[in-house]
Length: 148
Image 1 (cartoon, rainbow, N blue to C red):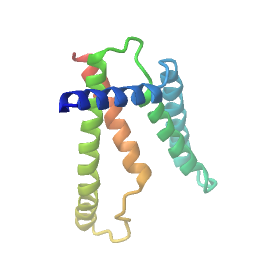
Image 2: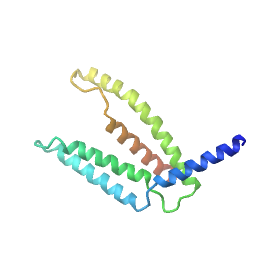
Image 3: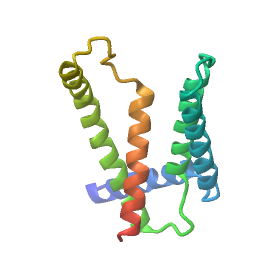
Image 4: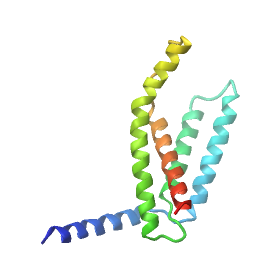
């Protein structure tokens, strides 16, 4: 077998796998609803003094799941261009997410130094990074799709 045949075989396997994990288009509305409800919930509990300890992490994880559902949902018409745009948006989200993870602690330190605060946590949580990356992916995907 030559390298072209191996490459084509692997590409076909990857495409079949990706098609299996994609959700139907109708799930996109479910994901949007979950993100909106989670955001509203997080906004409301920001102003409540007496909240349960589990509420905020639960809503953040619900938002994460909603964004993942949006990201994995198919378009009404799936073609090669949509696949290319989706893969470009994933690549951009990955690169920007890594840069965000590297530079956010530095930015926090600089702001804390300027403001004279010393009690601000400098670690970035995994939920924060994943939310940021999925927001970037969905945003860039929609932007690329509209500008095609």
